[in-house]
Length: 219
Ligand code: PMT
Image (tube, rainbow, N blue to C red; front, top):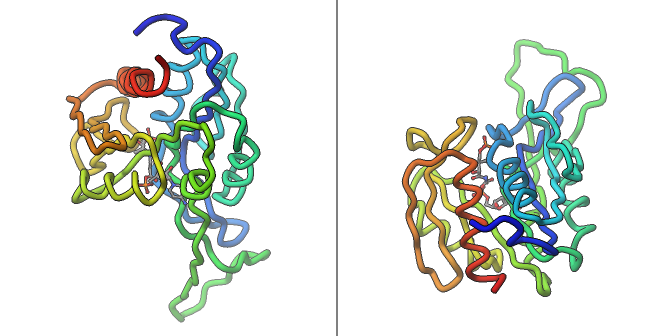
């Protein structure tokens, strides 16, 4: 890793979960702490990049010197990300975006009674997919969080979402995935070449991802 090897490069990073409200006191969400995305943002900043971080709710303090946009829902994250279409060199989607939201937001707390409650969920937009449809010169990096068929599913996502690179993590593996300070990743490029990495801190994983992007994108 060279200091300032990302000088003059603008990187958009998404991090954390999205939360999808059911009523004023309840919501559905994903299990992301935001650590992986924040580490990528910080690593990129330390290497000279201009970084914009769009994050769902986390318990992490805002990094100093990084522009951060806070969102709650997937629709909010989608709207903020789309403002940067055509304006960033690299987009790294590390957020765990909720694929579904309740169809109806009840403005008052839903009262319980003796019956079961059925919640209808509707699809949220796929942010990476929508960005990838007309990505122009932006280098697009996704994550794949899987519990089975990790590499095959990640390869499918490269094609479906028009990605240049994907970082695959099996979130059931000890030391990998959500919440902890470590991760175990495989990085796959759009030629389907797979590199597997051992357990590393999320800081080191962030730098490895930036090294891989540099090899393919910045020469
Ligand atoms: O935040 P941590 O606790 O540190 O955990 C890190 C992590 C496990 C969240 C991270 O390493 C990770 O895997 N992030 C992606 C989680 C995810 O939602 O993966 P996915 O396989 O469901 O989605 C694939 C890709 O599409 C992701 O880049 C995701 O950001 C993106 N996506 C998904 C759904 C959606 N509606 N829009 C999207 O853009």
